Image 1 (tube, rainbow, N blue to C red):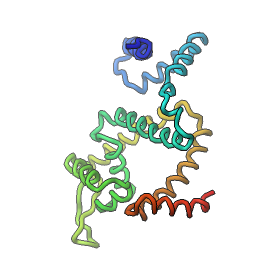
Image 2 (spheres, one colour):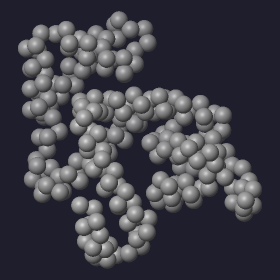
Image 3 (tube, rainbow, N blue to C red):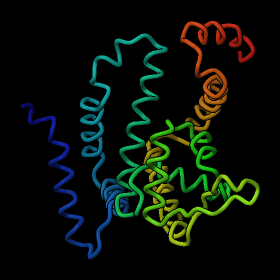
Length: 233
């Protein structure tokens, strides 16, 4: 086993031990800020050494990403970022009565819609039906959502936030804002805002395909996209 691979974890543990000694109620975001302040006051040679270690042993050492064709590299990086976002989200929501980003998005969407049918909520978030119903059931059982009769359609019921759900969502929003700042901490606003425009354009197009043609086979979808792509140059 290569001990160098775990050297950064040892350094992180040592740093946290130093931080914990001076804090009565330590928390992760204060720790991150403390580390940043500490390194701002350290000699430049030390910061350079840590930076070189990161560049040499970071995630880019995984050879398969570098060997892929450019389009695949772009898409795999998006997929990987999504996994890392999920990882940070679970950490941010750990002490709140929400188990996942999915539950957070359900509560947030219900708040925005004020009241929502179960199927409408699932369709808005483009979740597989069984997964969506399981998520809604957990939120109902935890008293974060409640159901009321739909006055316009007595056969259906509407979801809405409970008082408890509103409080939990308020806490989750705060932690998710911190997660967003953490996730984008090393990327300038100018850079990620430029990428955002591209991703939103891609998302809008593929959402249209997903919502309207998800039942078609891959070959048919491929031909349709080939005929539409010239409208998006």
